[in-house]
Image 1 (tube, rainbow, N blue to C red):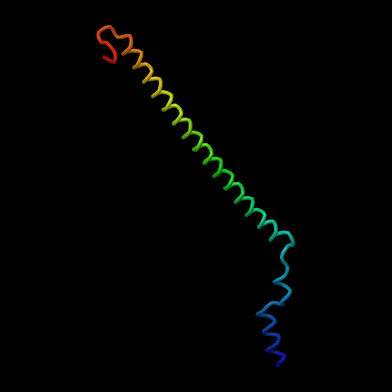
Image 2 (image 1 turned 180 degrees about the vertical axis):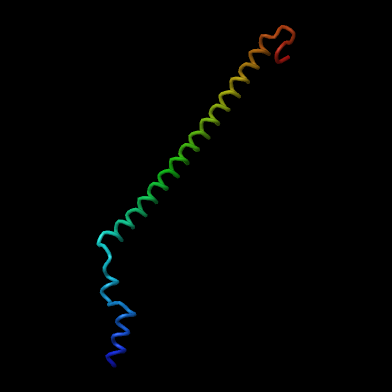
Length: 88
């Protein structure tokens, strides 16, 4: 190869080992940050799902309790109502 062509190529394209000058921990720390972000996102998502599930269960229990109490109050009202005779 011509010497001038070789010098021109060396000036345009850097040596192969210059691309390998990456700090040792940069890739690993970047991947660690990414997995840590996914961990936090997953944890928050699961916590929100748990809160929603507990709230749903509480609403269902309260509805059942209130409807049971209302039915019980209705039975007492009908039983002790002076103007009606229950179950006749």
